[in-house]
Image (tube, rainbow, N blue to C red; front, top):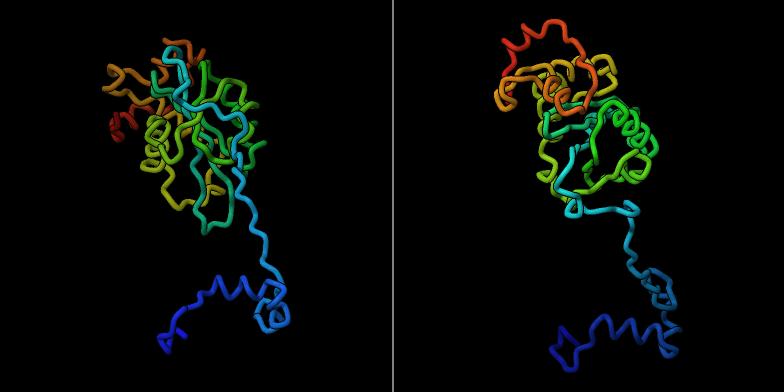
Amino acid sequence: MKRARQMPRIGANAIYKWLYSRYGQAWCYLLCTKRYKKRKQKKNTKREMIPDRIPLALRAKQGVHAEGDLFVSSKSSGTQRSGALIAVPIAKFLAGTMIENKKPAVMAQAMRTLNEEIDVDDMTMDNGIENRDHKDFGLPTYFCDPHSPWQKPHVENGIGLLRRWFIKKKTDLRSVSEDDLQGYLRILNGKYRKSLGYRSAYEVALEHGIIQTKIPMPGMKLMNEKVAFH
């Protein structure tokens, strides 16, 4: 009818409606799907990625805040080995640990371990599924808006420093040991920064009671001469 430019024209919806009616059932076997009735559409259900998620907007302004995130292996490496990193903005202090995968239980254990090393009031994370067990982190956890990494800039910057100086992008993190990571963090935390009044993150963290003891860093003088960041 369409090619002959005849009216009325019959659309596909009308044809299928007729086929699925009692008048057209006899011809349904000719359909590619062999279906005799319309498939029921599943109702879209909202998937709750992170139960009891508290938005960052509800975080108190006062207090010593921290930010957390992961840096991961390259997709081509075929491994989920990652690094969990925490940044404390007031001191630009970094704490971290290597984890074998991004399972929520593994992430929760890593965060508990890291939170025992520092004294902060709360944590800010992104909406990755690895943070699903945030109630097991050991302290109140708040979440950035979706696709808003700029809301936790200090941990993003910390990951950037690790990537720039020590662990290049696309690195298979199976080649990075826990001792390696801790050595890198000691260097970053021991560096004297103009933005901290020419003090190190260790010194400022000690001043604010975020850590209790300063970890000595051999070779710091050499790194201070060769590595500059603010």
